[in-house]
Amino acid sequence: MRVLLTGNQGYLGSVMTPVLQSAGHDVVGLDSGLFAGCVLGPAPMDVPSIDVDLRDVGAQHLTGFDAVIHLAALSNDPLGSLAPEITFDINHRASVRLAQLAKEAGVRRFLYASTCSVYGSAGDALVTEDAPLRPLTPYAESKVRVEEDVLTLADSGFSPVFLRNATAFGFSPRLRADIVLNNLVGIAMLTGTVRVLSDGTPWRPLVHARDIAAAFCAALVAPTGAIHCRAYNVGTEANNVTVAQIAAAAAGAVPQSTVAVTGETGPDPRSYRVDFSAIRNAFDDFTPRWTVADGAAELYENYVRWGLTEELFATRFTRLAHLRTLQTAGVVDASLRFQRVGAGRD
Image 1 (tube, one colour):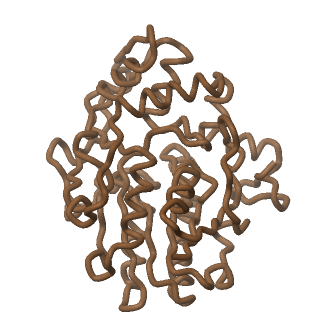
Image 2 (spheres, one colour; image 1 turned 30 degrees about the horizontal axis):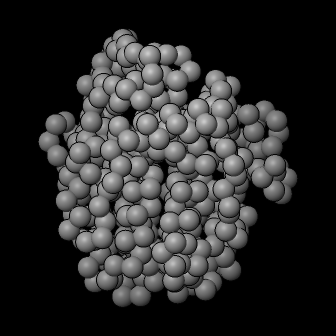
């Protein structure tokens, strides 16, 4: 299958690309390069990639593909809150336009990377895909809007599927340090203490980047009639954990590190546990393999192996800080558009 993978030079895309290739798919990327340089260790081998901002995608970019996997987004709650209009411009409007162009170009399957954070504050009950959507941030709200709008494009020739990923974790050659487990393992390694500023009680569903890749691979080849217009939570109930448990896993992976739950910011309203039975029932060959503890150990091993430093941790691998660096250097403008062609790939 010939697949267009947006965001192929991001955190998830750099993990998903070789998984898709190993499954026999012909993969072409589409990425502006905002995070192409956020590499820890050897640079990954990239597939041919269309160098274009998602907001500038044209019909010519969608021709000849059997499927689109749409990962590209501003994937950060602090950034979304700081610049909500840019978040909606990229994550919502440009994503819906991408789907419209894909349909017009004859692309038959559109796999959209949504998020379990669309459920917002759901308490202790396990939420299924039929639960009310209560997004609490501009990032989550943008994902809900895309699901709603792309659903209206579906017909017999265009089949969208919405994969609501749990919070990702795990090592990627293009690292993110601002997602919870990746962040806490880094803090444990660099400071010796995992500090939890909330009370540690909120629930978070976690899923490894490689398990996300496996889910998209399974959805890519599943019978259309079985998954047409469906939403699937991506993860496993075993990784429904509290923030305090995530902190304990991070400290457990880093020798001589400790946990300090300060509670200074109070309880976090974003708390939800997720039911993942639908995706298991839909895809016989999809079984999440990574536990939180295994992911913490993998992260620590790679942080040590590739020389993670405090400076890299706080700048290159933290999305908001990285984008501010690019803006300060005049590489991107206030709308996060590059000021010169290919600038993000240096």
